[in-house]
Image (cartoon, rainbow, N blue to C red; front, side, top):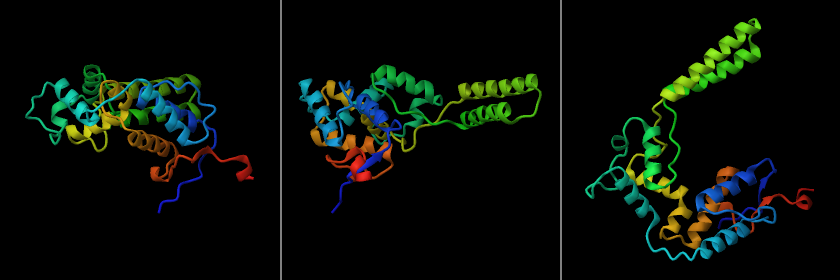
Length: 231
């Protein structure tokens, strides 16, 4: 039997704000007030109420709807199934391909990963900061070296073709990732969004901010440890 946590023990350094912003993004809603909330059950009740207020009665599988949108945006026919590898279909310039998919489908795409050029570009930015902070060069040379390193980093990042997100090997994988980031928007378009699904998403988003097992978060789990209990 799994024992739910009393609290995720956030310390007020922005975890709760990031969590609320993720709720707004995923469910495509605007939260009227964040301050009164103390438990994740209260978050669930608020999200369920807002989704219900839209009059949603979706019956279509959200992942299936996303898959069809992606397949249509890529100009593919019915012979292409969820198991089809995605790398050869979106081309080598992942950043542009995902931007195009986002525009065509109206759905937010997952973040692509940096390629080797992007990684080296990031190191150039680190080097620029190190030169400014630690170098014993005269000020004009120090500024020039840092600027040149930063400019090189920008150029490399712009030239980077990016890579697919981790675990995104097939169109089916991509459809599941996109669905997870667009639940509210898909529900507006007729996709099914049940109360248990809403709760699982809330658990997952809270776990991402806390670094804990989502199954340990229950309706009575609080954001912050109470002062009395902490004392």
